Image 1 (cartoon, rainbow, N blue to C red):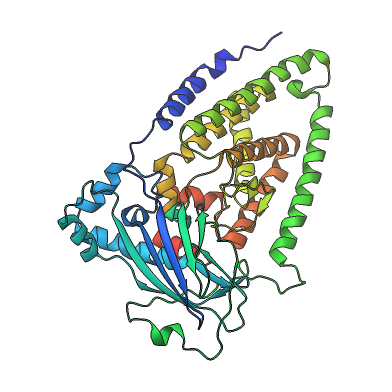
Image 2 (cartoon, rainbow, N blue to C red):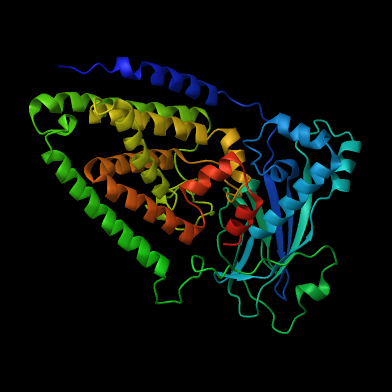
Length: 453
C-alpha cells in the first residue's frame, strides 16, 4: 500500500515553502566596490600596506557584496557612540584575521592607522554622491626577516574580494585578485641584511600588535613530524563512527519492528518513496540557497573532505568540519522527537522525511542575514554563511545521526551525545548546547572564553 505522504507532511511542507520563499527574497544592496590593497616592500624588508575598503560594511561584519542599504544608513546616521564601538571592534578583527607571512611563517604586522569617527564625518560632510559605500583607507606596517625568500598576504574574509598589488624593489608590480579570506600567491623576495626595521622608520599612529597564538590544548599545533592529539582523537572518532554506522545498519535490516527498512519487497517500495521525497527536499533546499546568493562551492575552487580550522576562510565551505558533528546530534534529537510525537505509529521512513525537512529548513534559515549576523555576535567572526556543498553535507550528517539513533539502544545514543558535546567543548570551545545558548542570548563571558582559543 502506497503511504499517504501528504497527510502528515501537508503542514510542514507548507511552512517550509513559506520559509524558503521569505529567505530567498533578494536584499537591495548599495553599489559594490571591490577593496584595493597596495603592499610596498622596501629593501630592508619593511612592508607598508594600504587598504582602501568599504568601512561601514566591515564595521557591520559583512561583505560589500552581501550587505544591504538599511543597516549601512542606520550605522552612518545613528548615534556616534554606536559607530565608534563598531569601528573599535572592526579594528580588532582586522588585526586578528590578517597575516603577513615569510616562507609560510607569520611576521610582525602592526596596524598604524584605521578609519576613525572623524574620517567618516569628513566623508559625510564632503557630500559624496552616492554616499554609499564609504571607502576609506587603513595603513599597516610589517617586517620580513633577513632570511625571507618569499612573502604572502592574507586579509580578513569580511573584506570580500580584494585586488592586491605588491611592489618589490627593481621589479614590476604584481597584481593578484583574492577571494574572501584567500592567501596571496607567494612572491620571491630578497631582504638587505642590517637595514632599519619598520618600527624605527614608520610614522607613529595607534599601534596594535598581532595577538600571540593561543596556547590552549585545542589550539596547540604539534612539531613537524608529530601528530597533534586533537587529530588523533578526530581520526579515532571517525573510525568509531564508521563502525557504529555499519552496526546500526545491520541491526536495522534485521529488526522486524522496522517495516520501513525491512528487506521484503512489499516494504522496500514505500521506503523508496520516502527516500525520493527526502532527496527532493534536499534539491529544493539547494535551489533556494542558490537563489539566496549562496556559493555552490568554496570560493577558492577546491573541495576538501575535512577542514580543521574553526574560524578560517574554508570553515562551513567544505564537506565537513568540526560543526558537522553538531548536525549528527541534530539527527539524534530529531529521531527521538519524531518517534515520541508519532508514539511509535509513524514509520521510520516518515520520521526520516520529517527529519530531512526540519534540517533542510534550518539550513535555509541558518543562511539568512538574521542568523548570519547573530552568529557573528558570538565566536564566528567573519562568518558569511555556508556553501551549498556544506549545507548538503550537513543534511547528510543529520541523516547519519538519525540512522545511528534508529539502530542503537537509547542509552548508547544518549552516551554518544554527551561524549560528543564534551569533546567539542574541549576541542573548539563550542558545541550544540553553546550554539543554541549563544543564538538565544550572547553571553559576554562565554564569548570571551571562546575567543581566547
